[in-house]
Image 1 (cartoon, rainbow, N blue to C red):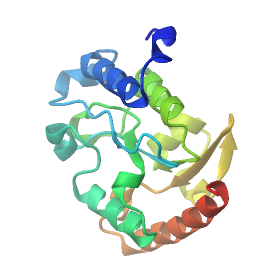
Image 2 (cartoon, rainbow, N blue to C red):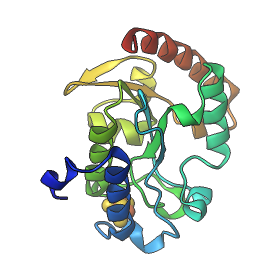
Image 3 (cartoon, rainbow, N blue to C red):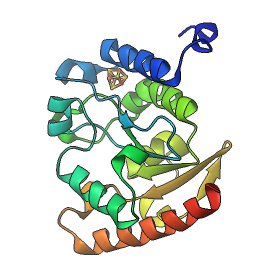
Length: 196
Ligand code: SF4
């Protein structure tokens, strides 16, 4: 993208330009199976940017992130700290659906990371919430485990990251949902400090 031109564009126009590039992208084999790419959506001035793993079946059909069962859980967790989707941004590590909902391969994560980094650079959130291991690997490297670092604020390269489990991990495990609720309370307290 021409960086000089970007300075003349509004945030929304830059976001649309990134999304257009995603819709044309064939940088990894995931483009072959997509119905729609899922660039992400939400508030371009958000203080919180949620990063999931990749689109599932419902997301692939609708071209929107977190619209299935995991999305309902994410909505409940947001509601538990009095937040709505319209106040945050929700994206994914890879923008096209991995076959059979498998975890994205490291080469697919790397092929797609420029889009995620461009979105992060545009929105400049106070905190980036990493939903599960794929997001953790994409933005902090492979030497972390979500179960060890979940619920802690990690500063890295001038950004604040807050890893938690992926909402899908709590679908059939009530104890994981309770842990996620606790992590959202921690997140709310962090945001009180970060957004003044
Ligand atoms: S997953 Fe990302 S890198 Fe791969 S084809 Fe889709 S947009 Fe391009």
